Image (cartoon, rainbow, N blue to C red; front, side, top):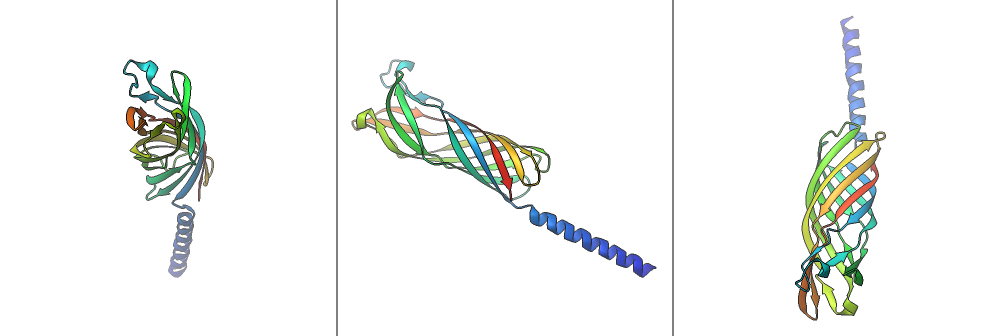
Length: 206
């Protein structure tokens, strides 16, 4: 009788062990999301003529695609790399378009997920943004911008789990993107793009 009970207990423990091992194996640390982001620049710049708001540069709003890759070090802590392709922006002065430029803004954040096992899982993140500025065409070729910008990034979001792998995502980021503006070799302004990115998308946990 004792041997039967011991054998039954051993079989039960082995079964539980295999179940736990399988569950751990299925919980991959990798997650990929695809989002549509509404990019809203802060539209702040130094005055060019020194008069007022009417002589400030403006960068247009737009909706952009985004792909991010997350790696979970623990159930709560994750690193996220945010990627897109170079985005073309219009630059205006007094409502008149004076040129365009492209920017590529990869961003790396460290996130804390408050309720990783819950169906609604909110998170906060902070990190760095590096923006590569290219294809600048301002003032008929007379203007230029700095080639790159480093800045801070802040993030808040919410995952809604559909099942073990799929989730819906709402994400808000604030990026620090700034550049000096030159014309004829002289600095004429400093543009602060500093955009909000409000995104919705889907995620897949491998």
